[in-house]
Amino acid sequence: MHGYSSEFEKNFLDSLSRRHGTKRVYANVAYQEYIADKHHVHMNATKWETLTNFVKYLGKSGQCVVDETEKGWYIAWVDRDPAALARQAAMDKKRKHEMDDEERARRELKRQVKAAGGVKEVQADAVDLSKGVSSFGLAAAEKPPTVAPKRLAAFRSDSPDEEKASAKKPTSALDEIMRENLSKKPKVERFENWLHDGIVVKCVNSTVADGAYHRKKGDVLRVVDDFAAVVRMRDSGDELQLDQDDLETVIPTAGRRVRVLNGYGRGRTGTLKAIDVDSFSVS
Image 1 (tube, rainbow, N blue to C red):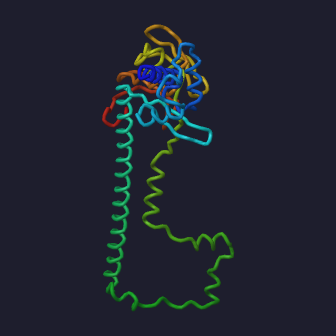
Image 2 (cartoon, rainbow, N blue to C red):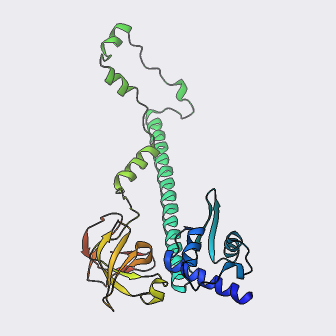
Image 3 (cartoon, rainbow, N blue to C red):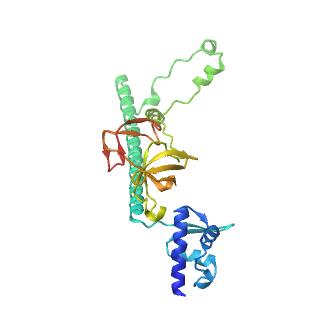
């Protein structure tokens, strides 16, 4: 029974990874696809009595990410390929770098606010000293002259808009600094899809055609439904339709033409000048 269980587990995971990669899929659908093979090992010959028990085993062993819903169990294969793990580590490092940038921006904002408040205090003290009034005796300073009601009415505005404008609360130093920073920072909109025809990509899914195209480069001929593309592989000339999750971009060398696929300048082309590996950026 142990031999059948090992073979069943291996063949099921091969079918799941080949058909769906790391995507989340209904467990029963994955099982039906597996048993469609006439030469498959039956579950009743293994140590797992039900599909639920087998799915829970895959989750506990770390080979899949599993979750139970009202419709049943869902399953997602975990790619343990060293290249995939290295790519995930690079993405985690990039996210940490972005978080560090945000923290530095917050500290700089606090520093600017503190500096702006200090300038106001110095200016206030200077005015008081020039008038010869002690900062502790401001309440006892000379009161402004009283204006007669009739004369005061002459300075009133009959326009409601002007009255509302005059009643607006003055902006604080923090508001001014935040408004200035927002005006300087361009609004960047990012999209989930980045595929574009004419770009060079690399297949990162080791399960496609049993790894025959893994880490191989190809040219995108056309985009299908935003999240898939028909790619002509450069080594073999084969044309494959691959999902965006199975691909990654190929950065050209300095001096070559490059296309911006997401964020600021999306869709534009330019010339690559330099690559900064530590900050995951180019110029």
